Image 1 (tube, rainbow, N blue to C red):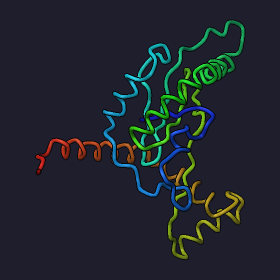
Image 2: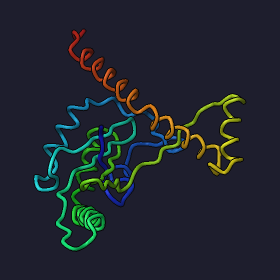
Image 3: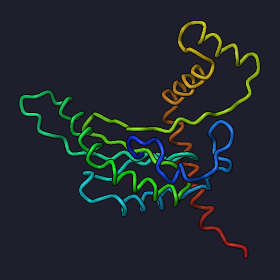
Length: 199
């Protein structure tokens, strides 16, 4: 798995300064591929030691790096454990905001991607602010009818929302296969990286 991002400002100052965005909010030029182990190592070295109780979960795509770290579960005493966990996550979010934004800015300069932050406490997990990226596609009539059926049935309010719903549904029902596919692609990248260099 993978995951992290900075809180509350959807993008850091480096994003506002910088990388040109084309129509629809996409980067004019896609960010170059990154080595997952290198990104994980960079965050491991950059994150303060006391923030998390274990390694962070990183999710990386062409637009964003999401970082979710585990927090110690609080002793709720006579209180509600779920509320205690939610409070622990909220405290982490508030107390680390400035540092997380600074780390996010540095990561964006290094990797060309915005950063999302999150935290997990026992079975409670929250990602604070995720990037929403428009994705353009062309669909033939049969495919459009699928989306229109979802809209007409009230499952979604628009074709774009119906398409997002469909993607989430596929992800939920093919998660194991998608994980196998990502593992296979990572192995290909590793082998490619060990290949000879031609000057």
